[in-house]
Every structure is written in structure tokens, then in C-alpha cells.
Length: 102
Image 1 (cartoon, rainbow, N blue to C red):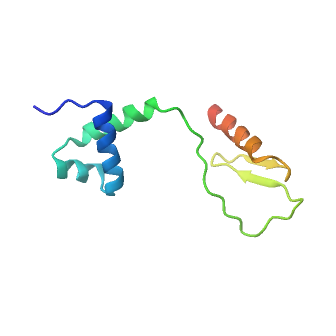
Image 2: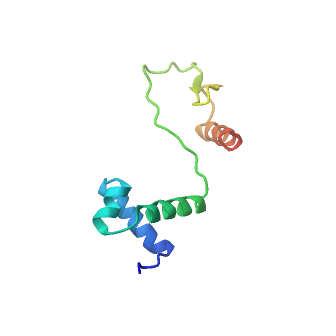
Image 3: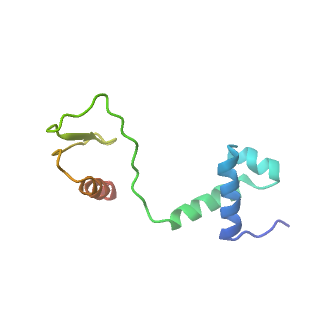
């Protein structure tokens, strides 16, 4: 009979999996574990985490002019325009609010 897992055991294996660079299947096979168990616990633990904003690094093709608006195009196709003086935390709040509605 296999060992019964708790969240701490699952977190330990999931951290080792992440640092190993292996696929779930390869990691599980090498350690005699069930890949389904790893996937189950990954989903359970992820569902317990509060949603966090998903931001990506932005690279500019050229330097922005001081008076040039900040224009963001989201994955859903929305284009958002912010004045250059808009504080970054306000932009983050708008993006977070939009993300919660989608």
C-alpha cells in the first residue's frame, strides 16, 4: 500500500519536481510515484492559493517620449491607454480589476 499524502508531502514533491526540470511522468516514474497523484495535488494546492495578478515583462522597442501615453494591448484584444503620469499602482489596479471580470 502506498504512503498517504498530506499537503506538506505534496508540496515537497512538487517543489522537487519543479526544480528537477523533468516532466511529471518522468519524475513520478523515477521515484515510483503516481503521476496522477502529483497532478491531483498540484491542482488541489493551486486551488487553495489566492489568485494573483499575472503580469509579464514588457520590453519597449524604443524609449518612450515624456508625454507619450502608455498603451497596453491585453491578450483578450483590449487596448488600454494611460496618461504618462499615471502611477504604476493605478495601472496595476485597473489590470487586476479587468482580470477578475474575465
